[in-house]
Image (tube, rainbow, N blue to C red; front, side, top):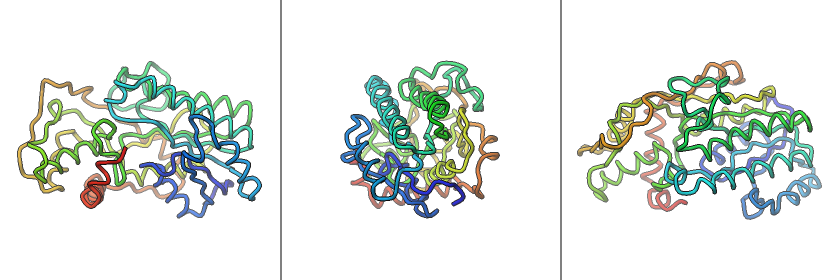
Length: 321
């Protein structure tokens, strides 16, 4: 631990990503605070002031915050509840930044997203382009809130001297993800489809498009390690991308099928859209910022660990909201 911050509050600390951030911070020797939403509700503000006050009295004042709490989901939620996405996430953003100003926190690390990039961009996206256009319509309500983090970060640094960094994430995968179809990430959705077919719970998996687009994927533990490292970074009002391993969707599906042990047919529906053919994040800036030997998991290894966890916890994983 090289940062001057010792006590770190992690919002969303029991979630898919948040629990891995908490584990990483504990491993590094921080004092970690990870309240549950019933005691620390960032949407309503209930319990927020009392939490900060209690920790000040206990001698563990919040010195830094990693803001990973979010209301999110797949394309389904972006289509059916865009108002909820922008409203709920913006309330959380405003409440956590305001609390940090009231109680003297020294640093905020924001968890951002590739969804915040302009929708017209394709190929490799660089941080300097983050404000060069509107988010893609399919993810605008979620992505725009991550842009708000950047605006809040600059405003609160100027007025309250709170240091700020943001890590913009590519597609994540790993244990403890949400596997329910309407809220799942890409890899979780593919694993569930293939596993259900392997177990005879469904027929042949149905996949959209042709499988030719390229996307990149990062293992959740790797993302958590980089986000925790953000506590050491200088203030920056543009994000730092966390890129992943690039693969075609078809090759991803075939690799998952191999690891699950599914040998049956896979049905692709070319009448469904492929989306842009290539969309990934530049990782050059990260190389300049990261302060530890960053060696991310290979996609095959990460998928193997994720599938093993899922198969061992399938009922619980499928039921998670």
